[in-house]
Image (cartoon, rainbow, N blue to C red; front, side, top):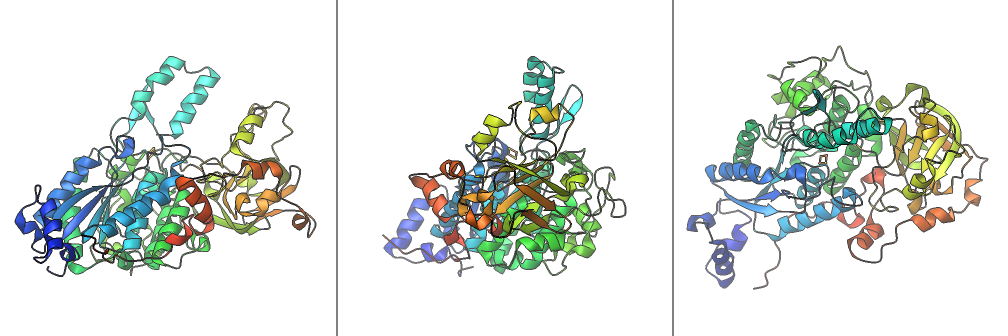
Length: 571
Ligand code: FES
């Protein structure tokens, strides 16, 4: 194994090799530098990322596996993002976490990396980093928490917080009971137990081929997660020996498999942005239209909250991801390989469904078409997305008057106004929420409905936004409108009262104005004044370089893989 990258630091008798070895001898035996692979464990454990707080224990199992296989494990704490804690939105720092991890992987004497993530942005950021450095890499998804119950009923993270708070407003739950439910909501270690973004990205990491087949969805407290983490450590050493890199695993075929998986599990729309960003790091030709083309006609097989009934614990008990993939095997590309070098489809032979209420067989899907539709038109020249399965069928073809909000704050200030000029046919337009405008593309697209319409029994309306939507939410919401208003997109030119036409079947989103009318308009002053204009630091760098949602909202200078060349010496 003397050809290891780490040997460029450690081999030889000169002063530099002396320095590199000497400082690493705190606990490492002399034979650690004899040419065996050095494996970083990129660890997003943090007390401020509750979903990932258990990853230090997972890291110890990975370490044991690496030692056992003849490698040297090196714990590498990396930037962590706790979805519920950081403000204004964790997405503002996904690219920063990816960039910082990439740089540390490249700067340090390592030959490969095990990626430990969980909470929403952590697995996407780690995969982006690994794609850019292109050293052998494998993901351990931290896993979902166990299902908590309150007053005898299971609680779905996120989704049930909204439901219980509505009960308080309705007077059917006391404030004291509401507070008491807090400790039941988060029953154990692990990430959210609904099919939100964390669950989706953990499962998609496996569908991409980037984790040990069968590990995704293993609940965080389940002893099998530690067993599989140990096996992943062993695998990482083997991958280094075989030189298997992310660019060989995450091919276009793998991304198309991930898109099929996204539809079959009913995953979060946030995965669209993340998969595009990861593909962008690898130079893989993946576009927004691939989600529509490949996802169309894929059946929804998994019945999980927020759209369905069950939780991640149930999905694991019912057979897990491999049982789902077995049902759509004919839609998967058999050429796509996993981190162990074998095709993903080779791992489906023994998979079985143990509970058909949670995982539906192919001939009894929850929906026949669970794909994401990509819309274009004079309101979204570069595209926008909608999840028809999460929308109201009667609104998929709709014409209505725009009611425009120039910012999240504007919407908050006016939505509750009993005199608001709105009815159930109105289209709620929210702008200034794209990657650049907010900044960070917050999950606000599913605007709450005006109370006066709620009181009349209205439960859904067409909403159009350049921001994102939580993976735990649903409704007739057009998201990720590109270009966003803050990047000069036509969404910034719409005025209250303009007729908006949505036609999902025709894949169109337009404002029905005389030809040339939009070109005569200037962006609304209130909207422009609300756009983010940070003066310094990461936010300034981000706003100056972030790309639009239709290409993954990465920074423009991070596109493409720059590999893992050795940093210059300075000693
Ligand atoms: Fe971390 Fe939901 S808050 S996954």
